[in-house]
Amino acid sequence: MSESKKQPSKRKTPTRRKQTPKAAKAPNIGTLRREKILITGAAGALAKYVIDKLKGEYEIVGVDFRGLKALHPDTVDYEVDFNKRSFEDVFREHNFSAVLHLGRIKISDLDRGRRFSSNVIGTERLLRLALKYGVEQVLVLSTYHVYGADPHNPSLIDEDYPLKAAGYAQELVDAVELENLANIYLYKHPELNITVLRPCNIAGAGINNSISRMLAQPLAPCVGGFSPLMQFIHVEDMASAVVECLYKNIPGVYNVAPDDWIAYQDALQLAGCRRLFLPAVPASLTGTLASMMGRFAPPSYLLTFFKYAVILDPGKFDKTFDFKPVYSFDDIFAHYRAAK
Amino acid sequence: MRFRNFVKNRVVSPEIDNIVDALPRQNVGTQGYDPWGLNLDTAKIGFQAVRWLYNEYFRVEAKGLENVPTSGRLLLIGNHSGQLPMDGIMMGYSIVTNPHGPRLPRTMVERWFPTVPFLGNLINSLGGVVGDPLNCSKMLERDEAIIVFPEGIRGSGKPYSLRYQLQRFGHGFMHLAMEHNTPIVPVGIVGCEETMPALANIKPLAKLLNMPYFPLAPLLPLPAKVFLNFGKPMHFANDAKNEGVVEQRVEKVKDAIRDLIETGMAQRSSKY
Image 1 (cartoon, rainbow over the protein chains, first blue to last red):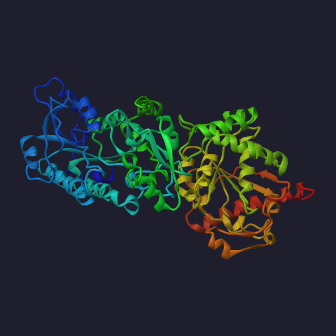
Image 2: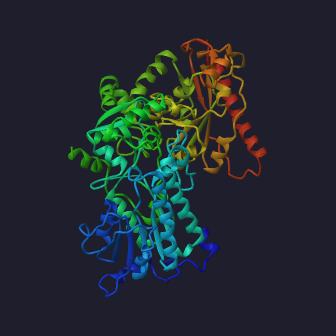
Image 3: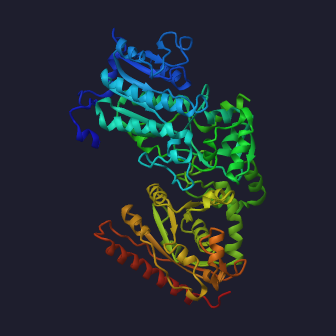
């Protein structure tokens, strides 16, 4: 990669260590001392699947503001805020080889300022500490929302496509900023071996993001006259993608999605939802009526994703990591249909 | 999905069903969609209507279909006319029903279509794709056939007095053909100029309605007989040193289309 040519002395790639990534990880099994990894957002559903896949091979330290002893009794956990001084103690006490940054404050959880502080400033602190304590690999979980739902979006968006989300929704500014921050560190500090993953809609058992909430509801909103294509990945497939990144350690930015597509309204019907059609014009009326849905209301930024498609090209990730999702759309939607 | 199935089961004939089911579908996913929004069930409903237009209303005669490669990436370049995109629809249907090997070509549409409720989705699900170079590149990478009218609205919106006079061609299609090593099949279309002869473009009304043009023309297309002539594939190496070379190559394609238009004019005995 071009960045490794610029600063060849810093990055500790598997090639530089003169062993294959798999071979590098294999001695963990059955040895007395296993590598330690830090997982943020460890109480989340994705982290649960990741921890289940990695706990035999790594010593896992989980961090989440929600606490996670009940979920993972065999991991060391911290209930801590990234922005607090005590967060550095986690790095002081453990010699992490990798950080999987899966945690993010959701749009519905806090106001915009506090969310920015936690997601962006907190991540900056996390990356600085990773640098200070010699962490060799950092994975940052982003989202496809950063591309923004623009009516002129081409299909099969590549990773180098501009991130337009901040121009469409204030709620997504922190997601774009987090990406920018990760990219700055990716090029400025190649020794951190940063991998940024931009997954499509993650769905499946335990996932509680906005789109998953829509699929789980008996009544789901959609915008009349629009049914954009969407991609969905099962949470277990996403966990496998994270684990592959950890094993192979190939820094860069990657879209993660299946090479398959479904219209939003078809997805709702397959998930057993009744559709509530919101008027498309005027746009302000769409938002007002959506907000009147009470507990069934989608976050306002999601309404543009109900109108315009953002379809990812997963080719780079699939080729680099030899990855193919196992779960089909039918498997994903069957879960929601069965729960109704 | 349920409504679409309801209509499909009542409207689509077994013949159209078989035609669409026999089409190559290398980019169609498990739910019947491709990444640009094409839905095969919606396409069947659309083709049912187009079949009547093709066979009965415009009585299309297509010649040279053996020149259309049955697989691999392909650009079909034609002359644009007739205010409404009837030329693209007729060309598309002729390739879908090509006896030498059917395939489903994609057509480029104006960028404002996706913003229009219902219409944007409908056009996408019938095979229309926003005319974006990135979309074209990806489609060619995935071995799709694409119909392009390099004149754009300069061709479709021109008045009847300029009929069969090729307007300026954009160079984008040639760059794509060279970069993606894609053959170009030139197509001469005769008859669509007469389907909707426009006397003038009412520009203030077009501006008011945010449309590319608003023609003073018949409200519905007239039943002109349409002739399609497909030329031999043209190949261009990716070795153009400057835009002047690209322009010369574009002129070669224009000359080929002019010849095919003349062939079509010679074939017809009357306009309607």
